[in-house]
Image 1: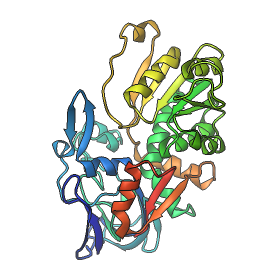
Image 2 (image 1 turned 90 degrees about the vertical axis):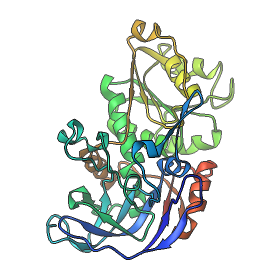
Image 3 (image 1 turned 180 degrees about the vertical axis):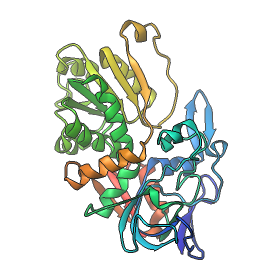
Image 4 (image 1 turned 120 degrees about the vertical axis):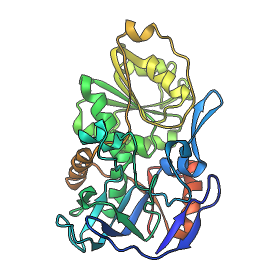
Length: 358
């Protein structure tokens, strides 16, 4: 089989040929139709995460071993099954749940494998979908598409799943006003999901006016450019003043930060009202000094959201089947162009989501 593999951090992906595996027991061989190009693939390619203050967390310190085939947003057709598989059949089109856990830690025992202490995630800790075939360890990690477009379905395994989890957390305090920071692929998915499962008025903020038309089509009620004071997009006053004004002068009930950089977190904290809820999602990196006394005085909640569990993915796929959410696919690449795909993503040339079609 043909694969695009990361041999070492910051080196071009290598196209290689290897023997196609044969599934045994509960394993399933999937012929990959589409695999999402995700920012997590970038971190894997770059070798880690910026922690701020000059610190860098290497993915190898988390257990990643190179070479590895990236790609965790996998959709394909079942090519072959092991003799222990009974829940799916050859020819089924499926979405793969990639956040595989150890099965033994406290998170895994309550079906939150995405939060496993020793994860075995596909496309990270074991070979993923930048390949024409992917060997799935167990058929229990597969969900039938049942009519959902394969390219659109890829994002439901990671970016869509992360957005869904984040929106559910942000919805815990029944927000009247919900701020979504970032109008990239994650943010646009978050807007759609928030429109579907909350009653909040959605305020999308970004530093690029070009993204706002799409954000409005996805369901944003208001848009604010954080780089501009007094523009058409942000209205009168500073961006923070504008957001608070939109929120009836009290501030937003919840903020989801799909960027999670020091300036965006600072903005998120500044626009929250009392009892506000800040959900941090993005992995941009960095560090930030905050006023600690503000947190108890305003009774703020600050929490993270990282992907979601298998049941979340099933719920999200059901929303896609109903047409309630429609992931935006803006670019498609061949497997041979995997390097270009990651380079374009890093250069912010992709609005919405990109996929590789092996």
